[in-house]
Image (cartoon, rainbow, N blue to C red; front, side, top):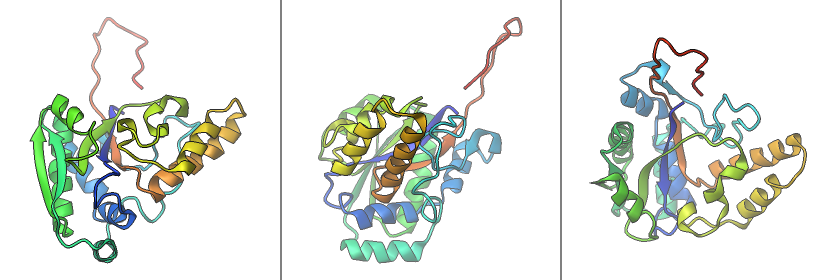
Length: 231
């Protein structure tokens, strides 16, 4: 895969900091429709799957935490959760960009789905460097279009284990910090896999961010080259 299509959320936002609101954001989405829109419906260029690590990364690929939640659009549930959060149509700032075509297309479809679910979005288009600058601050935005390129081991997810910093979109949970400390200890692979499953479950339970699915691009090589294997 080229990347995972992801929506970052700031955990300092007056609304997105509320767990019922974050869960409503997920229940509002049909992930496959988003991925189809990005890829013109070509199945070889998208994959609906909830794991932080891609299926090709067998050591840490898991569906933990996603059952009944990921790609399970339920607008009645959204309505209940928004009511629980006390949401009454307040503006939610969603920052995106046109620099990456797949991010741009994803954000258009995501925005339509959230608006249809009753969320009042202010979609702001900026260039990619400006988007990164905006989300480095805890205020002035609620959600931002993003993508995750492959990481090969939990130890490489530096941003997710630093609490209340721009690298974690100002997320802070002592249990997440504890689990990341545990998964990076020099223990057996099986122990690390079990701990990682706990981390991913917490990512979905707490809606650390929103993972939409996998996006693929075409690779091409010269005819006189051999032995190249794409990831």
